[in-house]
Length: 60
Image (cartoon, rainbow, N blue to C red):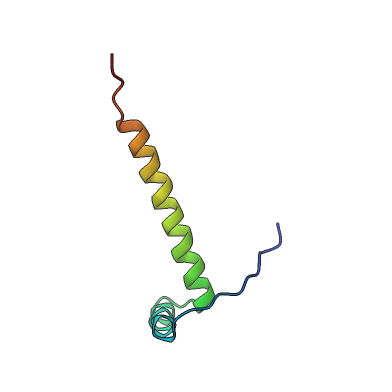
């Protein structure tokens, strides 16, 4: 398994509190919650790009 990438994230305290509460409800750490949300966003973005490509109609 590849090593996990570490990076510094500066975040608004109010957003941190929201994420901490959400993470606690889902039995995750805040770090785990952020990673989960980012993975979900990437999957949705990929799905959206696929739908855009599939939905194109060729002219001719």
